[in-house]
Length: 422
Ligand SMILES: *[C@@H]1O[C@H](CO)[C@@H](O)[C@H](O)[C@H]1NC(C)=O
Ligand SMILES: *[C@@H]1O[C@H](CO)[C@@H](O)[C@H](O)[C@H]1NC(C)=O
Image (tube, rainbow, N blue to C red; front, side):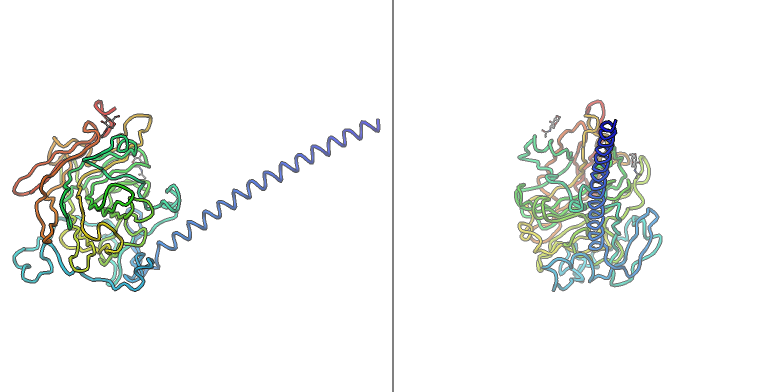
């Protein structure tokens, strides 16, 4: 009897011990999880503190964005060690359209352009000596694959026309329909870009229309300056069409980012926020809207300047950020790019441009018009020897043309998945 009691007590003790061990194990697992969660929260918070500088004033946009007016000398660029003692250039020394050449101003009546603006303008303006910066929210960072990757493109997203290695191009899952020029020295480019709001099938995909200013080979040291509009649910948390810029000096590895999400670009303009929604956008067989973008190299300082529309000189990328582009660009590209993540092993139905093929023409297909390059005498010129490139023309295509009004132009885009693009 006594023996049995002893055995059952021993069993009970064993059970209790195992239970206690389990509880202890469970507890330590969950506290490890808690610890790593709080570590991540801390990391995200630190990153947000780096990005979101103290605001002089904040403006709430109808799309849910908060636009912070940051004192111009407190912008993210000045976190860069090389920019500690940088004196901000409040205007370029040279403009390829002669905007700052007093003799030329009278020649060119300045058209106050189309009604395109940014959505947040309905709720206020930033004061002088500040720049508008889209506030980064915790959710924005959490949507990224890691805090480090937030605001960055994945590798190898450059369309590589001539010597394209097909496997590599297709492997990356990025699809393009572009026009390009190469084989010369370029000191800038401009385009007027039709604005649409293409549908994105998966949040981790995007659709954009932009120009690329490229320097170097397509290797690990590629230099790129990019600007245009994009719809990117992962980056912004919605499907709005937004103005964006990008730069890298090492093929998207360690340097560069979208907008002001790292130090690099120096903004001087108080009216236009990078990454903010553009409004209105074009509608099928209805009103068409476009934006003009000009990027050029200041021959004196060597910085790459960017202008939006006819009226807004946004700021510049300092020359020291780049290796090849410190001299000149070797290739210019204009056009569309989407990410095809092949959901359900089919081609994505994410749209490029308006989601229509080029042959549909004005009011239906999306266009780039008046595409130009800046030549070695710093003048805007028609691009010579335009090539086109697309990975799969049954999914997205491009068609060039030229006429008096539109100069060199092209229609581009498409619906992605369709019977000819399964
Ligand atoms: C990419 O892959 C598609 C489908 O596999 C193929 O039809 C197309 O030719 C490829 N593109 C290039 C540039 O090789
Ligand atoms: C974006 O659009 C997709 C469909 O195109 C929709 O499923 C998704 O809910 C939209 N996302 C937001 C944040 O509105």
